[in-house]
Image 1 (cartoon, rainbow, N blue to C red):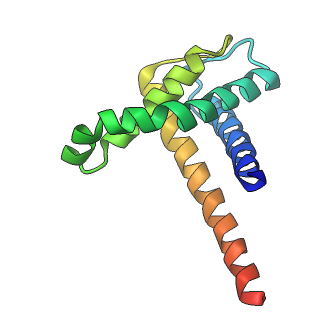
Image 2 (cartoon, rainbow, N blue to C red; image 1 turned 90 degrees about the vertical axis):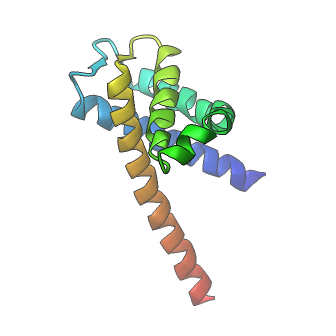
Length: 128
């Protein structure tokens, strides 16, 4: 249980960082004039909760489209999760296309960090 909570906290932090990076890279898609660090923390929490609770349901419902497009529809599903999460947070507004690009950026950040953590985990197993 402790490990699951640690993983959730790590995902929350990564989602928060990913949203902040995306808002800086995609400034034309984001409307974050009054956004603070707390705003991005709440947005990261909303995205983490949406990914944990809502995303599995949406993936099952969108499975035919995911299979027909050979997985590319997952970009739309990820964008939808970002869009829904940011609609719940005040002072952050985004277009749907910007949400899809933000989902790609967050996915890349999560992939890189998860790969680094897995590498460190494998190094510790080899050393033991």
